[in-house]
Length: 311
Image (cartoon, rainbow, N blue to C red):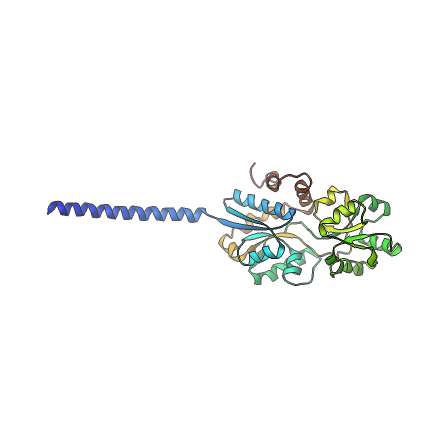
């Protein structure tokens, strides 16, 4: 009987020790897992600039201890919806796109006003705008550098004056949407006081603007300010001297729940916006599109050059 009692006592002590040890181990493991796992999903649209910006954000966050999943190559509305539905936590967006496309607001030319407006409007959508970069991927009108120099056209006002004196001389390349929308060619003509004959508007896909202008198929073309082909094809952007085109400044947008979970993101991500501008963005796009470097290499080297990560 004594042997049985002794055996049961030993067995109970082993059981208690095992439970105690297991509970302690499990608690420790969960604590470490909770503290160590910081997970974020980054979205991106389907063009070079977005791929580069997404890689900059992804690499930077990984270097700062986050586990990152990238969801790239999405259309604008798709990635925006994904952010609203929390399928992605954050991505780079443009002020003008959110104002006009997502929120059905009138475009705003002033950069600060556009940012403050969209920041306030998007609160109701659960989206927080972090500080904007000085990257303005707005519309522009372009010419070949030689023609700009020869004709003395440096601003859109210069273009308007030339078109009024020579209405049938210059062909203008644009897409069907930009030819009709109020913040497109029609708005430019109204603001600057000139008229382009319909026969002088050559409509084409947006991706063909730059090549068509380079190859002499048109004399003026619409484009986007930070596109690398402006530099690659020796094109010049005409100064929007009446500030007609709306601001399309890039900023990181983050879902409010994700920011509540990781409030440190607001300060952590500030240096990214502070070190980017339109000229830098065009150079980064150029390295990918023209020099055929990978987005990853371009993003990492930029982060290293700016002292944001170690080599």
